Structures are given as C-alpha cells and as structure tokens.
Amino acid sequence: MYKRIVSMAPSNTEILYALGVGDKIVAVTRYCDFPAEAKKKPKIGGWLDIKDELVMGYKPDLLLTSTFVQNEITEKYKKMGMNVVSLMPTTLVGVFNSIKKIGKLVGREKEAELLARNMNKRINEIKSKVKNADFKPRLYIEEWHKPPTISGNWVPTLARFAGADYSLIRAGYHSREVFLDEIQKYNPEFIVVSICGLNDRAPKEWIIKREGWENIRAVKNNNVHVFDDSLLNRPGPRLVDGLEKLASMLHPEIFGKEEAKLH
Image (cartoon, rainbow, N blue to C red; front, top):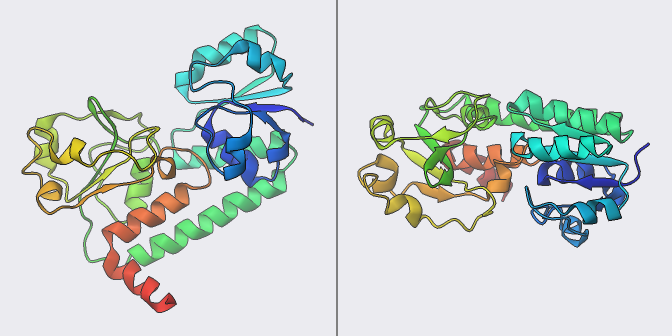
C-alpha cells in the first residue's frame, strides 16, 4: 500500500482527502488549496515548474499527475523509474473513474464507491428539480480570457444538468477559443467567468468591457457572474457544488424557493 504520495494536481489532492488518506500525502503543488489542511503540505512547484530535487527528496512511492498539460512531466518521471499514475478525465464519467482509480491505489475502494454514489445522488436531486424549469437559458462559461476560451470537458454536462442550453461545445471535447461572431450569434443570456487558477478573483470587467461583447444579452442584463473556478475546473468531488451553484444562478425560481423553505 502506498504511504508516501506526491500529488501534482489540486483535483488529485482533493480526492485523496475526500477518501481519508490526506495523511499519506507528503507534498503537493502550490495550487492545492483545498481542503485547508492541503495548504500546509510542503510544495514541489506548480503545474509545470516542478522541482525534481524536491520531489526526489520526499521519497514518494506514488506520484499522481493530471491532464494532458502534464504529459511530459509524467513521461519524465516514468523514465526516472518513478511510480507515476496519470488521471486525465475529460467527462463526468471520467471523473468518477478517476475517483475509483485513486480509491483502488490507496486501498479505499469502498470509500471511493460511496463518494461517487453520494455525488450521483446530489446530481440526480438537482436534475430532478431542474425538470420543473420553464426554460433553458443560453449559458457561456469562460475558462480563459486571452483568447476567450469556453469551458469544455465535463462542464457541458454540468451546464446541461443545471438546466442550461450550452450548445457551443460538446462534453468530452477540450476547452477551445470562441470567436466574436459565434458568441454574438449565440447571444448567451448568462455568462460565468471561471478563469483557471484565479479562484473567485477574476475581474468581471474582462467580459463586460470586452470589445464587441457589449450588446450580448448577458452583458446588457447584468447577468455576468464570477465563480470560484475550482468548483468547475477541478475534476473532483466539488464539481457537484459547482453544479448546484450553476443551477441556483440559472433557476432561482426553483432553487430560491427551496432555500426559502429551509430558513
């Protein structure tokens, strides 16, 4: 059983903690900021500027990498004889498979199954509420601003489950640049700013003051919302929180009433 894990992606770190094996993590990246305990772990760099001497110094028996961005890093450490496992989900099903794969690696298969089941339960509860929605507003979620890049991978599935029209990109496809003419034609009614690595600090002005975007319905109606990007961009347990936040934003007539009953 692996006892010394270096996690090279925030999603892997969150999954390890959710499975109850945070104590086995010996080092993380500077982006691994959830849960709070993860911030206290020693750092080995970021996504790409990983310090080999630090990694080796922690004598890991398992390295966990993520996404195609770290392909070269994964191959480099494999050539060095390190035990590297790469998690690269591009769909929501892939995220569940990653959770189960990590669960198997750390001897927490039952916990991984339970985590996946609980996530699915919450997803189904949100989907069943959204069925009562009268309309599906057009939604655009921006993952990067130079150039404007629409969130792909598992995000289109979350958007659909939240009761949105998200027809500019299909699930399972990598995020891609969007062009002015197509965004004007699509004319989204809601825009979510979810810039990679900025948490909830992305300025709304990047959208509302962008040339050519001033007549888009979401901008004109002040329906541009900044989200903590870790709720949508990280393929881990908190994607369900991101889904819930999306659904509440798009359909306050449904979720607002539910919340009112709780108070």
